[in-house]
Image (cartoon, rainbow, N blue to C red; front, side):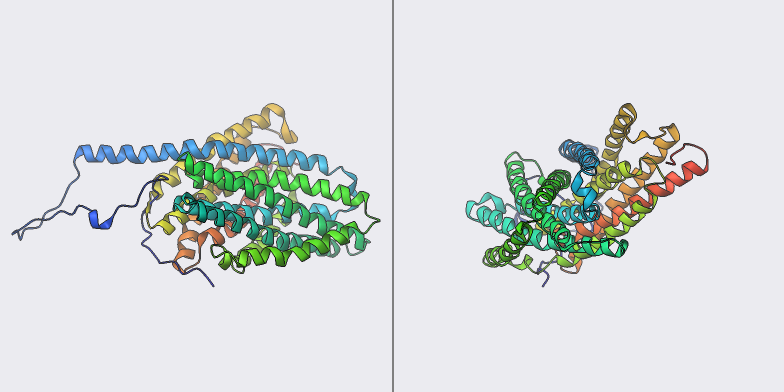
Length: 452
């Protein structure tokens, strides 16, 4: 059942700084006039306009100063994840069990959605003051950690089974043994569970620290969860798969599979006993599963064109990741506003997030050019084309984050649990498709040579 939240007016919502109290409606000063039948218009003085503009500029600067470092860390994380994958693809386990290549994007998408949902939920709790009380804080931390274990175990098994089936459908003539199938499924579940536990603790500590330091966790939590999640999950997946391949002739994979499936009811019991997260045990699964199917569309586009264009495999994660994270920050902020019943400055937040995309992408292009990453035919036309696509994708992500958050809230669904999976999955498809179109246009008009 969806949560029974009260609908609030959402035309203009303003996010208060952490620690601010909502204005007491009984104490609001109202203008009154006696014995007068004339009507008049109240005009703002020049000083009031200056103060209002200064406050808006201050909020934009605060958002930029808090979110920009996390976005830079996000880009670094995405680059590191790509570098790790470039190394792991030559490992023996990836050569022998090709289904692992199918598993990587599916698992990272599922895991990313779980961690970003956790970050969004916990950020909302922090901004509502729920973490200020030790009893409530402890219940929320342990309840969310148990919940993400249940979600990770189920999602990891689904990702593993989906990858095995997709591998069989794509290569029907190839021989796939039971041991290899178990290796893929168990590696997926172990990577999901361990990384969820590590990142869950990290995100809870980060958000609580942000609350104490008067930093809005909505501005930093989602990008950090996304970037660190990819690196940690990918490292654990490769290590676990290699270890299981060494012991493939034993019953280790089957034993681990039974243990992990048996632990699902145990973690589910702890979640069921926790009133703060009990309702999330059965809700929120639909967007996660549908997002996995949508993201597979981006994978199909990438698989078709990755061998035709140089640098496509390297640029796609950065483009998708940055646009998705900026949209996630916006959606997370709006969700917090809706829960608190306060107002958000839509225009200034959208403008700030959109402009923040420019320096981060320029920095990435400079690093790409200097280090010759991806062996691109780096021309001025290519750089301008990439920046235009990046700004277009970011603008689409921001508009989608706003409209989806307000729509889900209108129909009494918590945006923290429903918006981010759909948003990131759809943005993956849009970014990948637009990047392929721009590459094709550049090649067709002779502005650069990007063919392999």
